[in-house]
Length: 118
Image 1: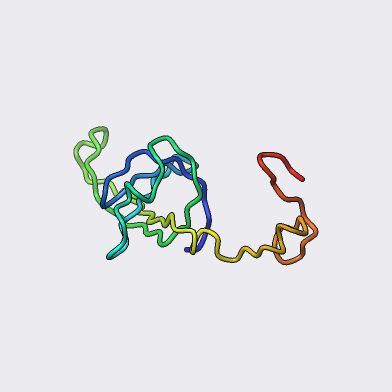
Image 2: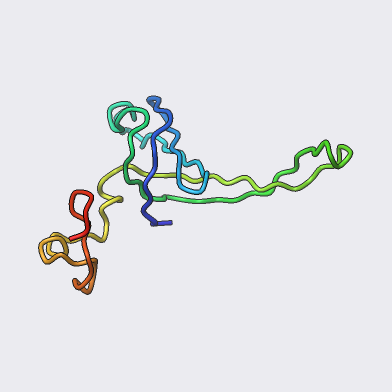
């Protein structure tokens, strides 16, 4: 929870969106209660943008394995809920970190500016 990730928007509907994440994971965005439709919030399909991980849950489910003679084998199912809203995605960032070229609290590290390291 609270991690920031880059994801590629795969599908956008008014109530939900599906996002491809690194390492072949999939994330989901749900419309906030009373919020605008996600088709108005998110860019189009195949757009890459930053997301904030709101929750990540893993549950064990059974599934049949044909190679095992039809015996139920445990499998893990992950559900990653994401938020595209700037208030969460940009949390922890300060303007003076960018003005000084800092990388957070110390201000001594490199900074990415328009695709290059400054």
